[in-house]
Amino acid sequence: MKDNQISNREIAESLFIVNRHAKTAPEPRHLYDIKKHTIDKLLNENRAKKVGLHFSDHPKFSQQHSTLLIEVGGYYFHVPATKKDFQDLEHLGKVDQSYRNPKPKLSLSRAKRTLYHYLNWKQPKKPAYSLQTSSQPSMLGQPTGSPWNQRRRRRP
Image (cartoon, rainbow, N blue to C red; front, top):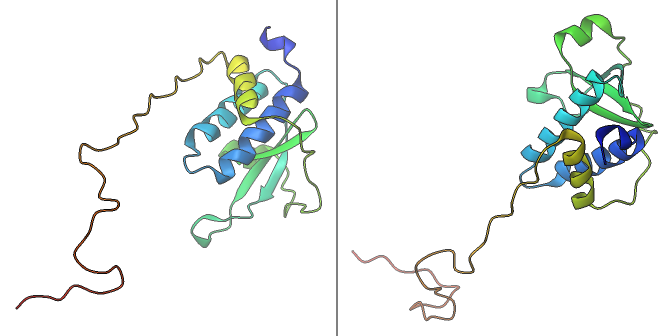
């Protein structure tokens, strides 16, 4: 399977899943990196289109700023805009809250696998987790000396 065999629609659906999970992930950095590199590559290959600029729904530091709207395979994504984008593209105003991307039936692992393949990235190995995280045994179930709901008294 080569890059050109992955359709824009497949890439767009995978991007949608990765982006949706990144918004709620405790560590979203890697997912946003996948999104950024994929969109950059799609733009370089003319497989994605810059539509225009939107005001951000979540301004940083209470300052109004704009994001770039990208269209890929019938899906729309927002990415940070560059200075050149402000010069070249039309500002579309507020985000249209009535439009939603279609929801694909795709798992995060399959979406990541598709995008890794498109980017020619190797999938990172999962770290081997040990059951015991510290060298000290757990204190669960051990008497602590006072009931849980009473403060310890200070000694003078």
